[in-house]
Length: 285
Image (cartoon, rainbow, N blue to C red):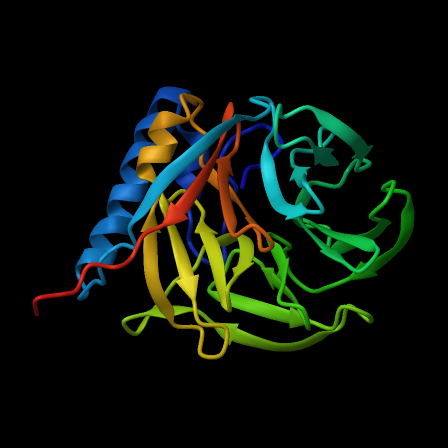
């Protein structure tokens, strides 16, 4: 999740990253970006860890390398994607086969587009710091209404009853899909420690999956308790994407429930990957 000058966002509430980060040179920021995930990994390793969920690559599709992906879902044979950055934010309907944009609606300045999700015949999107959400017609992206929320908007998904929203903290908000009012929250944790920087979301077979900002792991979250069930290590996909920009982080999970297909991409990634989870090996412990 980035600011308009394509540098790291200030997360004053969470301390990610410290303010001095913004005074670093591009080369220094690159090193910091490389070291930051390592520090996060060391934090996780300091507690007893579950084995990462195994998966295999099924297929690779083209993806717009200029897309600063903030939201992604699959619906009725197509991908729906939101992109960020002020002046470049948009919602799109995208062909899975060739990555071409079928439909697009620009999100007006000064809004920084974030997560999106479908509900019935509508598409709901949120923005980063303006506390402003939009409702669009799913068929043609024509505007319907707007709504307000407190704090920041990051990711969106839905479980068939509620919309679920992340805000960059360890909390996930549940919203009434008709009124868009918040109904409850859960706090996400792993082995008793908070898991924050929750980013793009997807609801998969009764679990909430979340990208973690500047991390190559996807968290599989129990929606009832907020506890992380397991992790999916997608570092091999980040490498295979071929993306080299400092900000080309994993951020995009889509699930085709009808065909049981999972799709993964990231910001500025020229590829979108279809993966399939594999059975967990039995532990000898």
